Image (cartoon, rainbow, N blue to C red; front, side):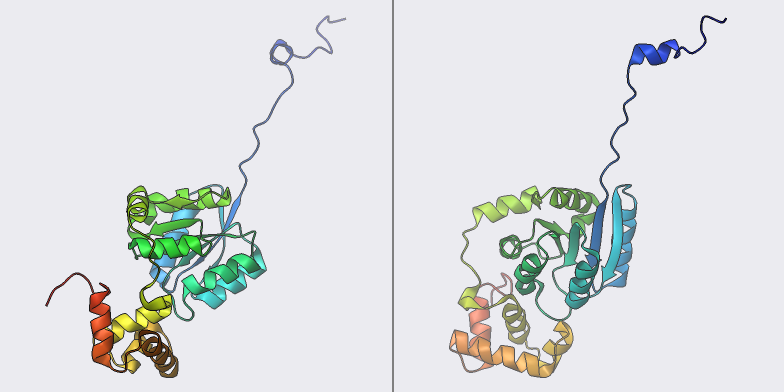
Length: 235
């Protein structure tokens, strides 16, 4: 009888029990941005990561909420400025309604005040679109681990600036309307720019004037300049 019959190969006996590396956990992602070209870029960026699964793409806040409800993703990547409701105002409701889905905000807004409000409203990540190709993947991974992500330079600016809150107690949407009105836009032009109805803009304008206790456009312009809402240009 062959003395080697029924024996494991020497290498198997020397190495002991075979172990297998655990497969990486799949991170399921929903993205929401109203620009198709941006969504395509995000799709390609996320597809390059073997452990990412893009499960849905939305074009506004309503579709983002609908897809999160239907797919229960690990992370929602959402543009800060989209048609409909203000994302900053909707964020607390999203986090309350879908506590298992973490949020990464993607935006062109580099002002620390926006980042502070987004993180305060429940977002775990705040990524500037200009840096999305190098930072978004890290932000999504961090969010999936329930960790925060913020660009170091923006984080330093955020820490250096006092948290004064929005001027005049205005909401984010009211600030957007105020800026456009102060720049000379009509109600109809503001509505077209922000994807709102003219009646909604009129309501925002009435509330803005009530909060700021001004009754005309010059008063709005003066307030905007005094609070640095129109840039640093001097007359």
